[in-house]
Length: 464
Image (cartoon, rainbow, N blue to C red):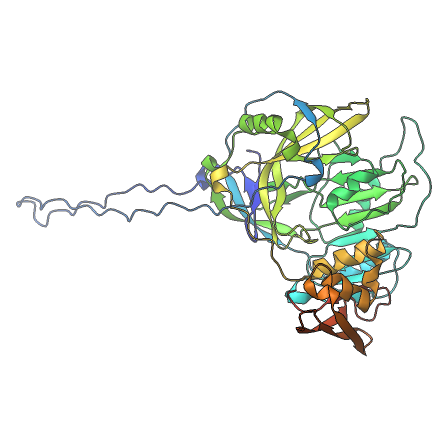
């Protein structure tokens, strides 16, 4: 059976390879039967033919391109490796099913991660997917539409991991924990190239918040690449992205966990093989500008690295593209087909390095131009700010209405003006701002998580 690959376009995934009978229909014509003569003694009338209408060429939806990670922009990388041939494949569009997020799901997640109580339901500006959060010694957030889970244990410090060749791999516990959380139909493998190991700085790849709380410890980040299957349609795809990420302490406890579940996929459409970049071309492009396609690095990007692509680890799958850089869920993003390359090597000082590269598998003419980054305030924005304060120690001024107001005005002409601020209730404050020009502004500040003492405040207007 051909290998399968999948793609989500807008609300779709794309996968691969189907039996030849499932290919796109051709636009050939066929003749209708000739009318028989009404009388054998008379000559037949001229034969007439009716052609089927010509089918319109199928238009492939454009997909957003992968964007480089700015952390690796200036990293010097020497990348070597073979360029094996690859078979052409057809891409298949799949619809995505998100998990059902009900009281049972939330209870199961909070119980598995050791937090008590119902949590606090957050604001959802613009109608975006709201988050429920627990703040305490540990911090948990669950998205009530997608089932995404973010967990942090910033105060745990049980020392470095034991040394020696028989160090336990926390990826095994991570797989079991993800299974306990539920909400996903993914399967996992913990062999190359379906598992990635990195240090504590690798956890920042997920970009969950500003700031960094992790002490200087040789803690281990593991990334599991989930595989989703549809047995009925005989389809499957592996997501080479940080959908399942864990930072484990020396004692094997999760210090940080990111769980992005999908409940299922289903066949939607078939895409022409001419839309796919040949594997050798993709390898040559990655070797030409490796920093542009570097996705995961096991050490801090502070010195040049020399890497070689593992010949066993040429994979086709998908990664997320599009959406906004501040999104925490995948609702606004698209799964695009990619090639994933696993590579190993050393830094200039001799440290062993592990890396993963991903490059678009869809040809450039089928990639959409970048869209504007202007956006409304979303529930993801608010949770990211909350985590930046509560976990990363960034901008603690946002914990007060006045501090949040000053942060919103910073950089604008009115920042040098005067303002008054008064609370209308425990979760709302009204500000009257007089700019140096004499212009007046009326602004409303609100808690992002109403009723939560440690909640940040934000400007509740949809646009600044």
